[in-house]
Image 1 (tube, rainbow, N blue to C red):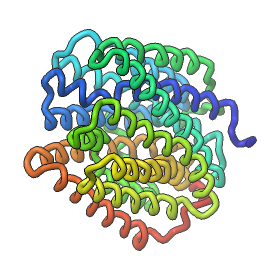
Image 2: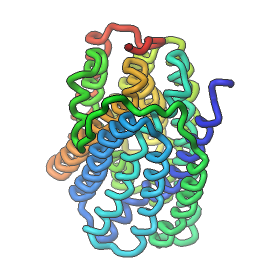
Image 3: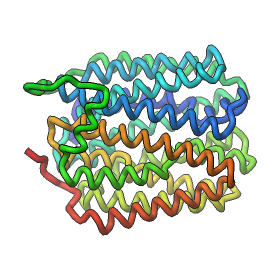
Length: 396
């Protein structure tokens, strides 16, 4: 597999370690937040605000990375901030402090995302984008298997003692930062006659981007408006009466499916078309959320989280591969940063609305609404976007 270069391996290992740290905390976060007095609605606001912070910074720092021609410094700083946020949660339980720690973690993600994905894109060709992004997602998601597994073992011996877990999560975060120090920029060339980069200057890219970019990203953003935080899926499992161990266990299962299928589905997308694989993923998503409205036992939850893992593997890396194939090399970080920036803002709305729907009408209504909107987006991609989605040459 010669297309898996040294840079791809380093970025993938750094993502793996960072995800171990983050995902060690993610499945216990809703339980921890409820234990310190957060309501379901406030949890939705917290998750949405965290993603909005990441989103706005993704667009700006993606644009800044393209403008300066540098990638590695943004990657290093982003992973450093995320690592430092972990022990902060062990210090105080005040809502404002929790919001600050989550914002710092997501700011780190925003700083690194565009530059990291641009590095991945630079290491691939249009014909190998699916597998390169798929491999990175597989490695990243292996961290989401290892992290909750560590949390599961820890909570078995120390049930309900969450604060020490936040300190343990700092260790893989530091290792990720150290590994990122050996990254080097490849063909880093700043743009000529570049204009100053303001915080919202990346928004201009939407007007000047290729028409296909706007069509693809537009559909993905409508989908994001119904795709709320996974916290709500975990809360559904918890509300069904399952223990912390069972909740974390089913989340580990989901991530195992995601990790083991992202790379093969990336290869499949390169062969049959990125669009076909992405549409298949949206179909699975719609089924999962409809099923969540009805699920009540461990077997139905296990089946739904299996399908949810396949959905994630078929969409997340594939979407970025598709976007990088329909934009100029010099704008890759901006294009992905703009997409993920708008995506995070939409997630803020999605999580907030889902939290409100759940509080007012119950979880079933929230899940059914999500499923129906996802099905509409699927039809849009099937019939409104007819251009080939694999092996597309870059503009320019």
